[in-house]
Image (tube, rainbow, N blue to C red; front, side, top):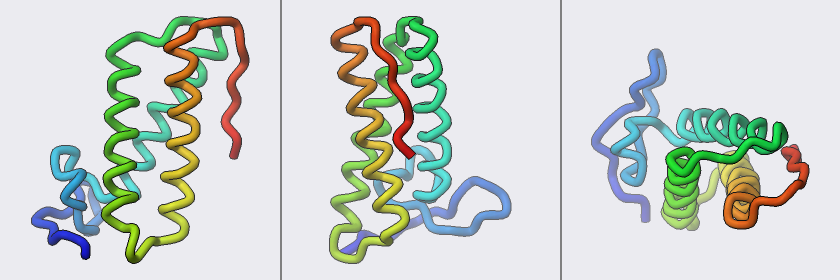
Amino acid sequence: MTAPTCAICRRVPCSNPVPPTLINEQLCLNHFLDEAFVRTNHALETSQARRPLDSVGVQSLLSDALALVENLEEGASNPDPEQRERMLELLLILANLHEYAAHPRPMRMDRLA
């Protein structure tokens, strides 16, 4: 069962509800995913340029991953296939970035989509 929401997305003109797991972000799941992909793409560009990922950025990406897992769990009984696919794709990319940050070495990382 999905917990009730008490807010709507802060993006204008979006009026989608904010899931409880994203209440601090004040974003609906779709807009959260959009922003998380932007942050992730920036990190991919950084890694492709062979520049180190900064610890604050990595921590932000790990927070994104936690929010994704919580949203996957929350929507497990009634998943939206497109959102679920986007969340799983993003989790895979974030896992690869985490591995890169933990073991920096020359490697090329590409987005799989």
